[in-house]
Length: 472
Image (tube, rainbow, N blue to C red; front, side, top):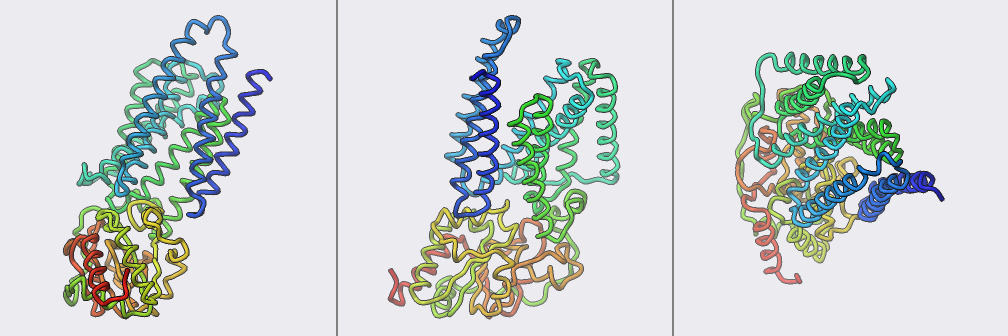
């Protein structure tokens, strides 16, 4: 078997593993094995790329040793950093890591485009156009993802907004497209400063595009940049005539696009509204005065009340992850189940800082999948619940989304927590959520606030229930 045939066969198998792995990732039961399968496909694709060295001509052989050395160094650095960071990253920081990986993928696509363009290696107009598009999209994804990471990590706490911002960004985009068209028109034979200006402006545009977006919208932004990265990789795969890159790019791009649309739908907003509105940043929205007051309750009393309930529904949020309270929460759940209390989890599509965040968090604690329900499958059951307990969630349980037309989140589908007979909200303090929107649920007549760190609150509830007897 010659090298070309072996490479093509390897890429075909790798493509199958990518798609099959993604399919298995669609279910929590098979997601872990899906990641392993897709990872095996990537390993195979990387190894297959080294087979190109078997077909180099004599003129290229002097450069082969240097290129192989650089490739191996790059692989070693990437594997070492990914292994170390992957092992030590906390669940609360997983969204930041996803943002970084998105950015690195976009940056790699932009780097490929730069090499192909500056080295005048693209000759056809189609390849040249795709190289330019892949370069600009990859660079935007790189800088935009880095800003998203900084916002999620708390390193950037402010938004960049000023009068005429949209006009500035629009002009910047038109200038980028004009330079890209100029490069294509001249067959890629332009001065190095033109390429440099093109990529610098693309990086700047990624920053300018992301800085105005509020923190509450960062999950959608990360998903969008994931789609951008896949698109850029797919374009550059065509430029390099690399089937594995093309297929991987298409899979990532389509999955990221679908996820972005689903998340926007879950927030009852368009992607354009996410990118160009002022939601989720300042915390100073005019939405009227809240009626009533927040009513505190002791964690132990709340735990005892749940012990004597018939049905309890739990709505987790990012605060659960911050407190790393998922294991204690499951211990509480098992105590309630031992007392013949029906317990279910309700997961909002955008709970946490990224899609699936809460599912992964609960799976880590060993919570069975059959008691975890998506919003649309459990929302009608809240009115039958004796107790609903909210742990670290905010906007996803705010009834103002249904009733207050002046609220920025009006129209967003929410968990119907307020319809339960009794609602307990576990919260560290009286501050607003990530979007800065005041939560009407906290002031409702059937709501009581359990203030404190979620893990400590869970411990107090567990102790109170065990003091009644019959617990582990």
